[in-house]
Length: 215
Image (cartoon, rainbow, N blue to C red; front, top):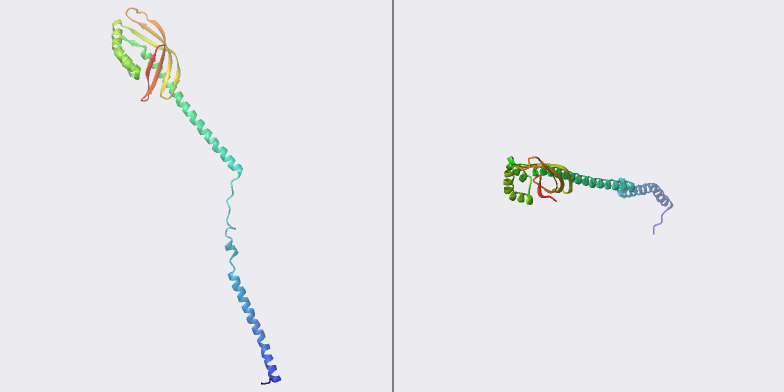
């Protein structure tokens, strides 16, 4: 077995001592490299929390919701009242138009001139419809002959009227008529006062008498 001399031992120790700083430096470099790699592998916290920076929309408050509901309710009520007003406005217009038509037609119906009997009959038939038109057409031949023979004349004036009932296309009107009547035997006019109940229907935009009653 070889024996190491004192000089060999000292040389070996010196070599080992010289290598220690070099080994320490290498260890330190490896440690720094590992820390750098570890830092690179760590996920970016900002990337993991994208939602943290996202802006949230504010929720509507209960007060705002209540105001919106009240506003919507007011709009609904206003619309309904407007619709009611419009319906009533149309009905009032229909009533007025039917009443004017009834007054005009009652005066045509109660005014006659034996010298213009055909013209008078034409006006009466033009303003009538339905049941009344059929009845008047059937009786017009006999009535015409009677008026001509007696040289009768009549002039009617509506002194008062009122709408009993009405819709947009049908109405019943009550009329009070003064009629001045004269003929060959009674040259001085005689005033006949009568009541008339007239039913009118709106046909092709015109109010026409469909029924005339003398109660």
